[in-house]
Length: 144
Length: 145
Image 1 (cartoon, rainbow over the protein chains, first blue to last red):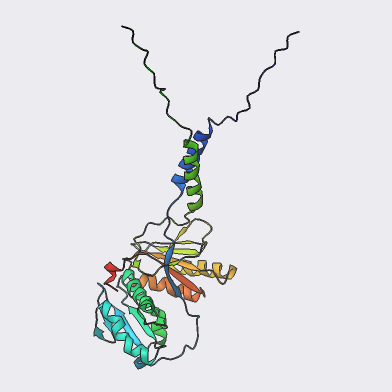
Image 2 (image 1 turned 90 degrees about the horizontal axis):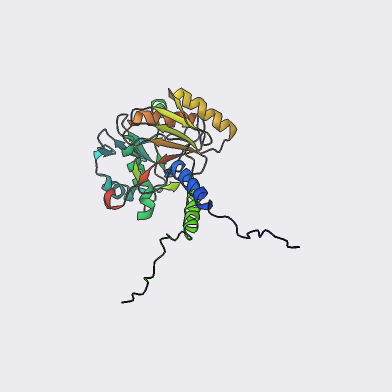
């Protein structure tokens, strides 16, 4: 008697694999974004009912005006001169507070630029340890 | 004259390596996949110094015209109409996790008074640290510093 055996293929069918993987690629391409995930860290001070009083003479005040104009302790200055101005003061007192006070109408980008400049002082051998950006409410409450 | 039959080249595109290439692409996309919880389009300020923002940090975004959106870092951002809403949102987030970091994603041209109010409410909500989201500034354009 003749037995007609069916031969079963031992190959894994992979013809549809490319289709499936292409669909997956299209899904990931459409849904993924290169999100901006870096920035400047800015530690907020704890709310203090009685903050330590700082004499104006003991701190350095940087004012940012609308349009990007800068003043340091009442004198007009260029951004690249700020660290040179701070160097002798911080050598005498490394913990001297440096206060950034942007004008309400100044651009936020200008504040970030100055804050970045002060934070980068460490790379140039001048660490600005005490950077403060008081809010308008704090200025109204504690400024004198 | 007897011409020898020409050898015919097979009209087949070799696709054997396609699956390998496609799998490499998939692995790349899987590794870089990032669900963006806040899709607000802003022109970020530029800074040279940039540190990695923690994953799942809460986000407060401010557009060029001062519109604000908030997200706890897990779910999609929702629009808020005033800084009081930001305060109640931040207070709620900090009540759940007092160490939660916040990201401020504000347009570079926003008047500082808007950002000032937001930072003030974050201080009131006892947020420990705020990351000011920024784009990379090259050293040459930063005034040679």
